[in-house]
Image (cartoon, rainbow over all chains, first blue to last red; front, side):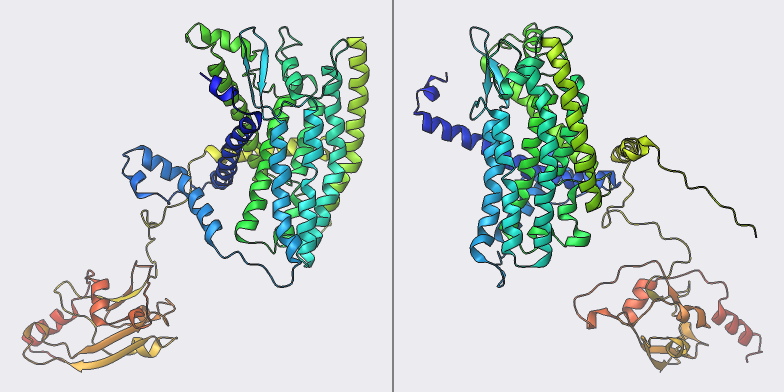
Length: 386
Length: 180
């Protein structure tokens, strides 16, 4: 059925896959902005945006009303507004870098997606084939390398805005990113120490990490989040800090920095920053789920293969590669969205740390903790794997 | 008064990790996430107006459908922002159902851009003819639209129960030959 696709030129295949992923990421980023508003509203005992509706959807008896209450059409209204409002270019900015910054913001946000696998299926021999844009052997390294580039857009925007608050915001952004990058990387290392077991070829790929979490047995089926809770915790905290989310959003603290590095931006350019922020969140949540949350395995100790075998008893087509692929993507996407909900839930729960607290937590708490964690697991893994 | 020195306890280790507080906070917000919503969806749902509410000032009629205002202009004089303008008028003798009422307003304008909803007009009115009732939402596109004329005021006011039937009493008094 798919021979036609696999006979295409690899470049065209790549383009098609890339477009498909962008077509998923962008609406999710848009829906996340809506979800953010809805979650905020629900937590504050409000119904949230629920008025916009397209007339011909209003004709659908029950479902149309449901969509309206869910605020789906506010996404389109917001997006339409963002596209068509005046895209102002202040007179005092450095125009070239001012325009460059939001573009630079999008590049790492969308590039990291290529290195993140989002599903898997089994070929006729039962071998696991991961689904992803680029099945890189250096997956984690690529994500770390590219995602940190996101701070360049903040620096560029802050500098080019030629205005004090954006500048302060960008300084904070870079300082915060450097502070938490270290503990984030150190927190991930135990996972890869464990995954690169003796006798296996060395790799940094996410595929191997998920494979290790889908083995039979108590320790084999255990997600790394349970095996290395401290790593997972440090990674999660660092993720919050790196995506500039509450309680670490000192970068965007509107009470002291107006709007941080995007103070001078409006309309579509501001929208690009916004989408980039949410793309970072989506990719970050995805990486967290791959490393510590079992990837596309539905439950701890229940791997995708087991789940498909169970489903096979009910559904005749459960073993078809297409079904397994879609199922794994759905599971993974569901987990990623659950993580994004956690991001929002935390945002509407916690107040913002002060900037000195952020630095103190980063350097004096997280970094020693992650080093101790690495040492402990390095010794433990050396003893276990011999 | 004795000064009680309260010992300031140092934070415990768990408190300094923030974690128990964060988990507690998350539990609180989750409770609110699934709790029933507390807001009114305004144009469709209206708030219940408590008794004694001071809304838009209106003129009322007595249960016989007669206008109660006798254009004494007390409200006009008491009105702090000078929102009320009354043009007094006579009542012609051929209106038998309004006999014994000396005067009625020819024009009665309340400028709602000036009105401060203080309720002094209601308080001062000797005829109980002007009431601040339940309407709380006044809007218009022009300044002229925001001036409530007599017709509008009676339309907003409607009829309120009357305890005195002052004019009926005056009529009975005259019928018994002891008019003032």
